[in-house]
View 1 (cartoon, rainbow over the protein chains, first blue to last red):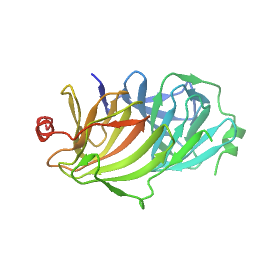
View 2: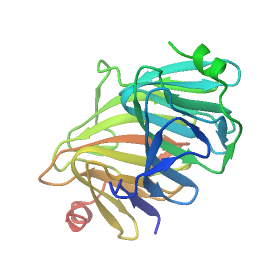
View 3: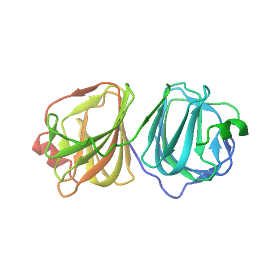
View 4: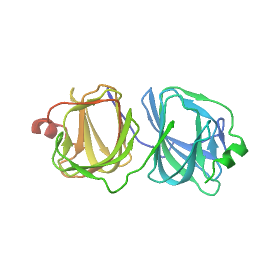
Length: 128
Length: 128
């Protein structure tokens, strides 16, 4: 089996809390071992903790408006239709803007290493 | 720059002929070096040639109905919302069903190696 097939079930959405700030729900789409895909919805103000993916991560935005930001202060504002590729090992966070929801497909390659919570000042500084 | 940002321009769509059968149009979304993303539309009956991606390929279907098939005869029928991960080096083709268009986002990792055209008999055998 060299093709791994997935789709959101619409029946397994779970609220994420341990490594997220605010209200975030996630629906698994694919688990192919080295590659996992989730649909993620962030309510306004919600975001991930700092983290890195050892094989990189693709975010494909399907609704709302959000931010993807790195440790060195780079911040990308994203809306529906935008894609962002975070290179292997690049420490970053992503989430909704303060005044908007965000929905994206997250394609994660390799192990995910989680860091700490994004400080409110860092979150605010990355807002458009 | 460790975040690579892209979106379909809607102004650079090109018709692909060299390694495709039938009428296929492609709109580039992201070129991040080792990772490239294109939105691809296949008209009914259209499909790629055989090919492999040395880092793997993710297909995320956004409209229509199509097929992803491998050399060993595995064939996945896909519709909107389906994702398929073709492992690094897995030789495969993808395209529309004979009676349906197909639109997908193709995320290609590493070099693409192209083979020959998919024989009509192989295409027909993979139809649902």
